[in-house]
Length: 78
Length: 252
Image (cartoon, rainbow over all chains, first blue to last red; front, top):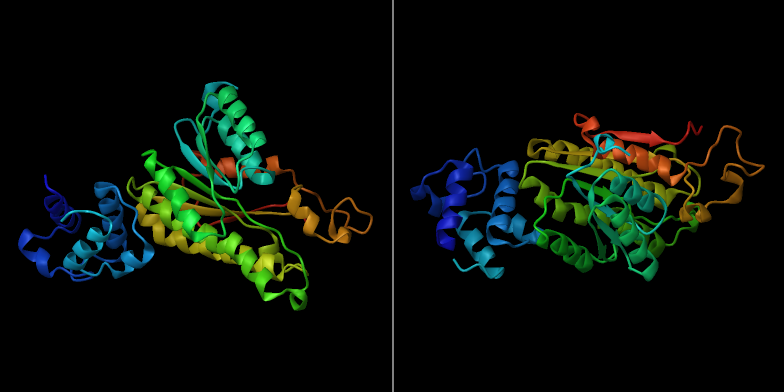
């Protein structure tokens, strides 16, 4: 599985969304991506990509696309 | 001790401020109950290395010293990364490291106030932020914050220290609520006067055993605080969260 696939899969399994919804998916855009879901997302991504995110990046992680930008800062090739 | 009596077998604990006082007592007690431990200290010296090696050998547990300064955010992050790199689940975090400070509030310089809050509150806050993520992955974890009765009682001379520990108690209560859905619980212990280096900061007239001190006062031993930490770290307290337990020998 590529990193991009792992990234997409994380959102799909965690938030119960479809692949088609991902590009426009934003924080609090679906019921499952609430503050608790956000922390689960961070924990899952950190484990998947073996990184430890800064608090500022956790706060700025406001959408599926923004997340790609942030993960690239940590050397994750997406 | 029979293995059946061990309360922390199979658990991994992170304990800060392990080289003396309450932290050292918690380290010893947790090791004797079968926990693997990341023993955090500001600086590792030969005496501490020898102590942890002996402890690990005696109880057949793994003890890994982690060195960082609780007042330095970069070092805190680096320490959390070191711990994460072991890929071991973190079951228990004991935020014990702290500094004492005693002065009337009008005699407390801003720099001292900041220093007390950096070590006693900001550092543990940041360290917990990092380690909680390791716990959240497994939907399980346990945080124990070592506060103080000074946070509750409003003792004269304790404006900075007491306020920093009061912040830690509030923090405990908040994270207990916020992290419950992640299977993580959080409690605080509020020790009364305890026989540690922090006692040096206190005026002589308030130290129990001195002629001017009140009759019912008692100085706690670090091991007595550690026993409460053991209870909170173990599954015996599986349904307790968001609480502050005073361990003060009935100090009035």
